[in-house]
Length: 136
Image (cartoon, rainbow, N blue to C red; front, side):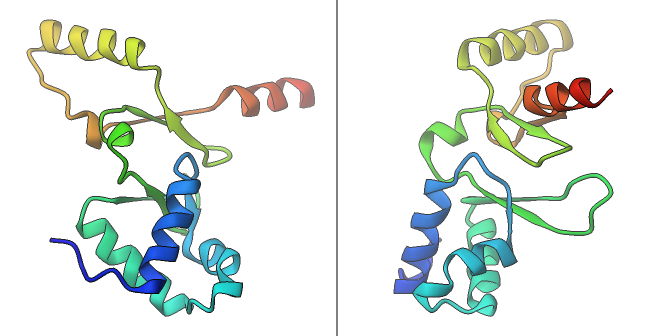
């Protein structure tokens, strides 16, 4: 059940939807919304509520104690498999046709129904791989 839409919540949801392919920690969000007058405690409180409602996913990166949040409230996001880079933290949607092939294969070969809305594949994105190659 969704909570009452306060001005702070509306601003936070707008910000998160504009950054849907990013995993952000609460302090980053608070800094970005500082001019809007939203407190860090209000950010945390709303993020917790949004997580309970299934509009925000909470994750953490390898080797980090920070908790990151990503908006998944849009319909296009719920139907997607997400790819999350363990280096930079960027999260993006897997190509739908490729995801369909993967889902079909897992269903047929493994007799397993994948919940797209809860599926995140972790690895290293192309940009980070390129960066590593340049530094070798």
